[in-house]
Amino acid sequence: MSGAHSQSPRFATLTTSTLARLPVLASKTVRALAFWLAVVFPVAYLPLLSGGVGAGELLPFLAVLAGNVLALTVGHDYAR
Image (cartoon, rainbow, N blue to C red; front, side):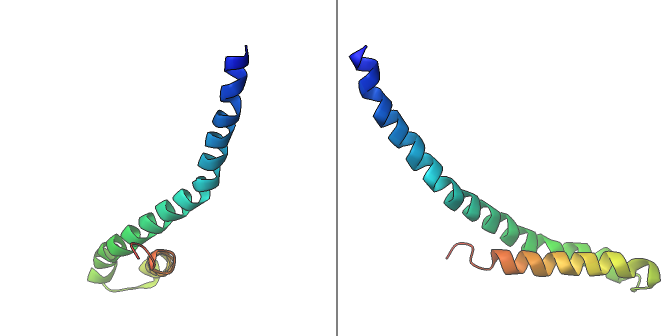
């Protein structure tokens, strides 16, 4: 029984250190995803701009533009 008790603090330390690194890992993942979205977003401009931006295309164009700006803002520190 003492053997099982001796491993408990080590397991708790491992779990605590893993949980402590989780926000950093999540932040890096979100930053990487945002960076690559910012790279891919301009492809969505092509079909929207090919026929001209009329009243029907204005809202989708602004949504893609806002998404691109957001992705650029969040992902600008990726791989630094």
